[in-house]
Amino acid sequence: MDALIAAAAQALAEGDPIGALNWVALRDDGPALALRGIAMARLGDFGRARFLLRRAARAFGTREPVARARCAVAEAEVALASRDLTWPESLLDRAREALDRHGDRINAAYARHLEIRRLLLIGQLDEADRKLAALDPAPLPPALRAGYELVVAGIALRRLQTAPARAALAKAAEAARRAGIPALMAEVESAARLLTDPAARLITGGEERPLRLEDVEMLLASTALVVDACRHAVRQGGEIVSLARRPVLFALARAMGEAWPGDASREALVARAFRARQADESHRARLRVEIGRLRAALKPLARIVATGRGFALQPLAGEIAVLARPVEERHAAVLAFLADGEAWSSSALALALGASQRTVQRALEELAAMAKVQFYGQGRARRWLTPPLPSFATTLLLPAPLTEA
Image (cartoon, rainbow, N blue to C red; front, side, top):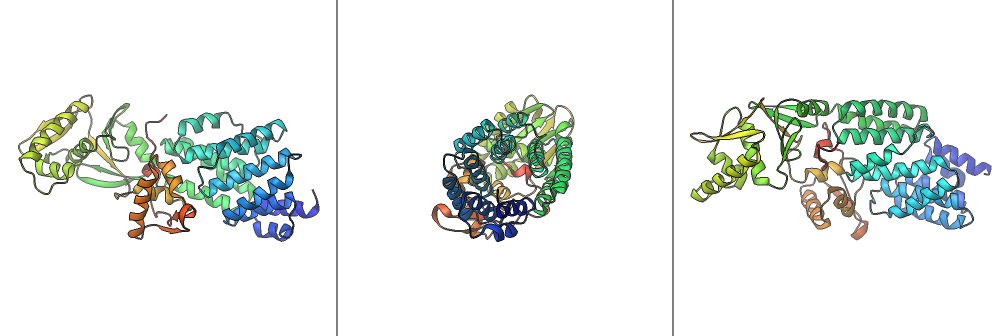
């Protein structure tokens, strides 16, 4: 390694991409192209970064498999940062295997780390956890160790395990401090705010108050019957009745849950479940049918009794609490993903949400018409972004089931 390459690499390690470019901006050999690509990625020009990294891989050729594999890992990192979640995983797998064969354990571990981050981003928590368990963080340098602990914290947060998340974030903060990279320290601080910002709203006894993730965890572990409007389920302890595919039944359950300890009128239930302004006889007949279905679904947890003016939900034990999202609006999950401040493509959002790309495109167009999101680029290059959502955590807006263990 010559002096200029060494100086550029040191500048990148210290979080100074401009300084790195000053050393190698006019060079077109493989190492210089790779460093230039990484520097451009740090500056946010992901398209240019990927172009330079591919040029670097070609410049190294087949005689330098380790350098080519490192370029592939760097390109995978750029793809993840630019939210290109369709980047072929097989390329990263081959790069990791090549690094393993040639004894580059740190970069092989980092390739695995990138794979786990992608799984976390699209909500495949079990697979991410399985691969994380096979990754030994001991040899990782401070910057990579901070990233590892952020992934551990991210999985714990999505599963509402706040104690492990807090411990992992403390380790991430210490590793980021030792790495001395301001952007990494800011990322850890941003993740830590998810534990302190309001993440949901509690509605019980006619009153409403915000909850942090720790409070949500305690609520779900309590004896209360929880009408969970974040995951569209009714739950008590370990017993869960999912109504995610039965929106009318869940609307009725939520309306009665919010009215507890009183009852909900038939007019209110019809308006909530069927979106009808006035209840006619057909609505009342349909309401009786849906109440019967809900009564059967909730039989292990609660009873539904008829009253003079409507229906009341009565738990078999404990009290009733409604857990609501921090914001109640359409396409909240789309906004939650965009709240990370990164630019997303509609295809990446569709993959993360588990929805069709056309459904996501319609949601983005509606949000753009309301000036809640912005875009740049055209066609496949179009990217969507929005400023981070202020003052509350987005964890419960993301489409991952709370029941994963």
